Length: 467
Image (cartoon, rainbow, N blue to C red; front, side, top):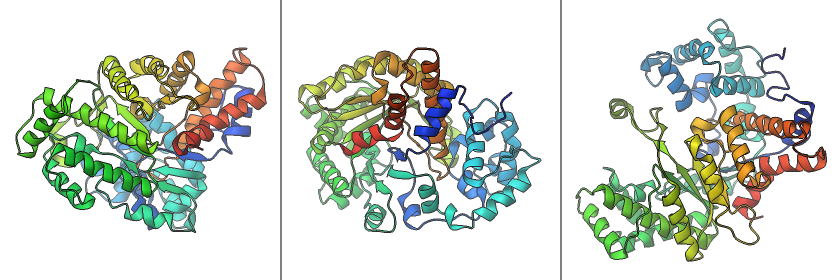
């Protein structure tokens, strides 16, 4: 019987162990999509206790605590930090089978050297041990990034951002990790939101373009793309809740934009037409700068209206959508390709049923000299568990070329979440190790180890930075 969370955790064959120890462990991390705050990196934020770094902002944990019946006071409310940690420890024994159970104990072991299983019985001891270590330089924001061997971090940034902290970090010779902004134009895309008018006003101010028409909007966004590029930006990110594509004329979109600018409500058809016309125009801008366009598709957000009203967005009330995106996505990508304006594109799905469809879609669009121009993104959010990541890689391999896969994304607000990369790497090595030992792949360790290094780091670096 294997011991829980031992050194060979998730590695079930000798070949898997060799691949992990010889190739995965030493590979740095290229974190091309996350939600870390560059201000916290610049200020080298430190934490008074484990609750602040572990539970603050982590809607994965919040969600499981709610499902366990923990009161909101101990999740996002005003309970003391120790009380929140105790509530988390109370939840943990019921999480067996959930990836958060594994991540929790990986983080305790990797960063704090703690092998104990978290429970109400061990909570006080673990609380005190973690809090003592959090007072050391190794546990500041920068210290954790350096300990995790992270070479690149792509944050998620509004086009109206001044990128002040990215600039400060870029000019700081004492910090070697690249912190690059990622262009996330939700304010322009979701014009039905109540914040649209105020966002447009801010866009006008930062861009120097009076956004009083759709052409002016495009000019302002192009100015911001250029600004992001000057400050190290090499990618965009888009929340695509459903992928529909409607052919529209420029005049029709101008009328829709003006209608909303005057404060009128739009129909569903108008919103769809506007959204994907704008996305195509943005795709052209990204292609011109040789950026990567990331499409995170299929999230059904803010399902609990009462809790959204109480707590706001992104607090753990989202789930997996059921969308038929194949035709719309194909037409969208093809419309850009027809104009030789399709950027490198990563397709992320939240519903596992879409794996094969997207893996097949990758092969429809290519460019000479760019291996895997269109990528199937790693198992994400509700799919970043053992079954989800294994199935994503198997579907990728069955339909495409897994060797060109750009690997794991962190998609987190926590500096401890780099343990998820170790989780992914163990699953990757175990899968490849099983293929070797079952005769499905050659026992050529030099080749297989290089494949692991490529998927863990090298492919992403080349893909995003064109090296």
